[in-house]
Image 1 (cartoon, rainbow, N blue to C red):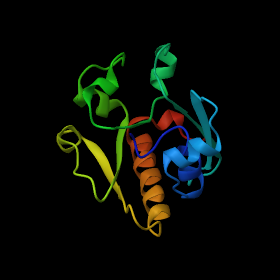
Image 2 (cartoon, rainbow, N blue to C red; image 1 turned 60 degrees about the vertical axis):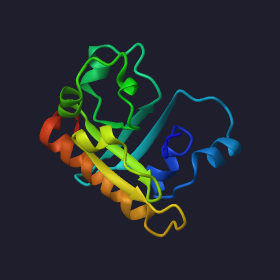
Image 3 (cartoon, one colour; image 1 turned 90 degrees about the vertical axis):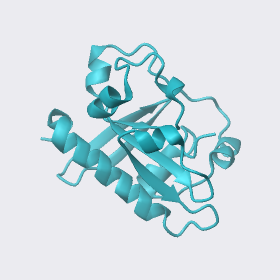
Image 4 (cartoon, one colour; image 1 turned 135 degrees about the vertical axis):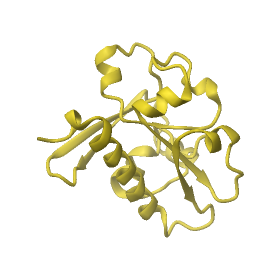
Length: 152
């Protein structure tokens, strides 16, 4: 299973509070297909990010707004994507891989152009720092590749 899921992504990216996906799902077992994350952007303005579990039904306008993907490792994760090759995918959105320190880094992840963020399995004291680093990575990608999505 993925370290980050729709069940725990909101708390993690909004507050830096990591809760294992299984725990978060137990507290809120309703099946969700998307989550909205709100964040005050460093350049000002409130930004809303939609996190989805599937790209099924995406149109051209949806693809223009994709800024990041949480990468789990297997290439089948990108089945149905507009972009077919990893190089093209990670040129069009920021690849992010979050993993625990007791797990070996996936071979695909090592070879792809993605940012890697390690969480400590036994301690939670660095979670907020890593969440902040994830936002820095997304912000840099947006400044470089999709400035039209930034607050005016």
